[in-house]
Figure 1 (cartoon, rainbow, N blue to C red):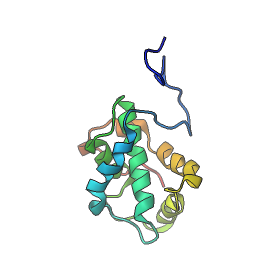
Figure 2 (cartoon, rainbow, N blue to C red; figure 1 turned 90 degrees about the vertical axis):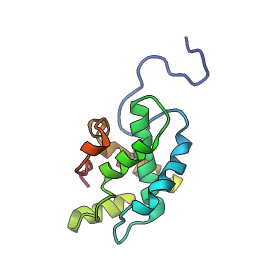
Figure 3 (spheres, rainbow, N blue to C red; figure 1 turned 120 degrees about the horizontal axis):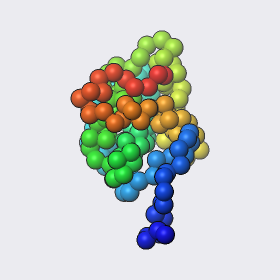
Figure 4 (cartoon, helix red, strand yellow; figure 1 turned 90 degrees about the horizontal axis):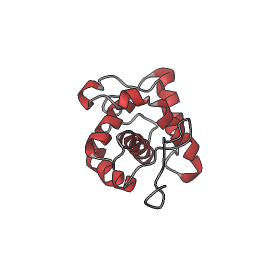
Length: 138
């Protein structure tokens, strides 16, 4: 029997589009602010969309550890999504821009979830220094 409202008993359901539940996920917005100047955006990418993607992936990493997001989750998300490096060129760059387009709007929540689902949990379990290559196949 759960001791608190909203507490999950047993294992968390797994699968695409289920989200990454965890405590204090709104704090990630402040954390993303601290790295926003370091983000390298492509020609057709917008900061609001990249911030949403980074925040959602950071929340996924935090939820894997069962805790609220910390700055290391945001840094890992930026590395895993490839926003510390120039945008990929060619078709990969176009796919990344298309997937990111407007993903910060609630109407495009499925698009944001698709971005998060592209990042494997195994990549997010690594220490930040070991996330040297982009974990997402755009």
